[in-house]
Image (cartoon, rainbow, N blue to C red; front, side):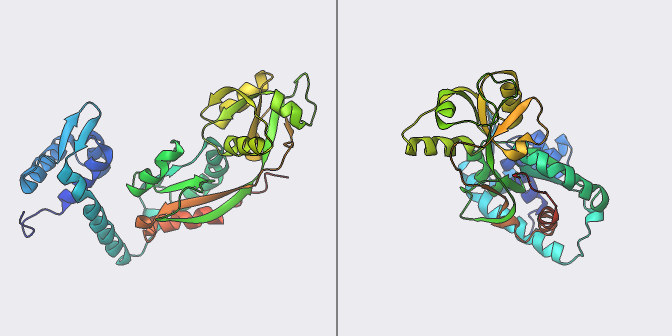
Length: 300
C-alpha cells in the first residue's frame, strides 16, 4: 500500500463496514450511496490486497487482516476527529448527530422526557436513540463505537470506561391492588411462598436471590421477561409479585407498592462511556447535559 496515494476517506468506510457487518447499513452511517460504498470497498480491497470482508449467513465477516487493522484504524480516526474538533468552536445548535444510549426501559422513562426538552431548544438537529441490549453486550458495543453512552446500575463496566453518577433509586415489591393475601406489606415467608416475575434487564433479581441464599431461602420464578413495564402489567393482572426500582412504579396503575422484607443496597444509576470518546466534544456536551438534569426523588 502506498500511503501517499491512499484515500484516507476509505478508513471511515472500513470502520463502518467492520462495525455494521453490512454494506448497506455502513453506507447509511458514512453517508454514501450503495454503489459508491461498493466502489469504496473494491478500492480498499485492491489497496490492501485482501478481501477484508467475506459474505456469510450473518453478514459481512472481517478477515484476519481486517481484524488486525481495525484497532489502529479506529484509534487514528478518533485522534483525527479530536484534532479537527479542537480547531473549531463546538456549537450544539448546529450539531447533526445521532446519539445511541444503552439503557433499560426504566432508565429511558426517567431520562428521555427531561433530556428531550433540553435537546429541543439547545440541539434541534440531534437525534437520540435509546437502545436496549443484554448487559453482556454493553462493553463491546461501547468499545466499538456502536453506542455513545450506557446508563444504569452497571458495576461490570470498569477497565477502559469512565463514569458519573446521575441519581440513585431503591427497590420495592409490587403486587396487584386486588391481591387476595397482600395488603400494603409483605413478610419474608409470604415473599418466598409467592410466585415471582423476574426481569432480565435489571439488577434487582440477582440481588434478591443472593439475599435469599444468604438466608438459606429460595423463591419460585413463574415468568421471566425482558423489561420492567411488561412485569408491571403482568403483576397488575395476576397474583404474581415482582421486585422493581421505585422509578418503575411512577406511572403504574392497579398495583400496590410494599417495602421488601429485607434490605437491598440502593441502585446508583450512572452514565458510562468508553475512553475512546472521553475527549469527543459532542459526547462531553451530552454528558454535561445529563448531569445537569433534575431527576427528583423516586424513593420517598
